[in-house]
Image 1 (tube, rainbow, N blue to C red):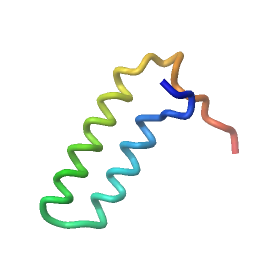
Image 2: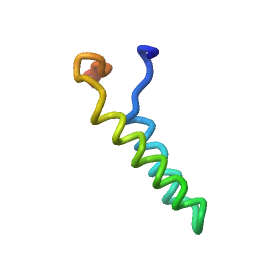
Image 3: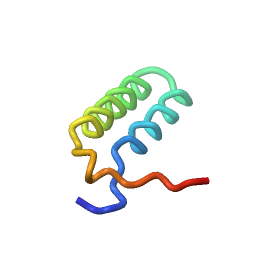
Image 4: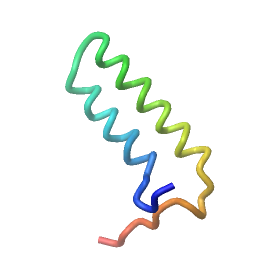
Length: 54
């Protein structure tokens, strides 16, 4: 996988979008976020991108 790939970031982005919409689209985005979150949990910690200090 690409080094810039971050499923946790994708999950957060999907949830932010879900907050902005209603109906079936919201449910679809929530399911996407849950899938991204599951990928983040399954991903080995050594392959997670390092967080940059502020």
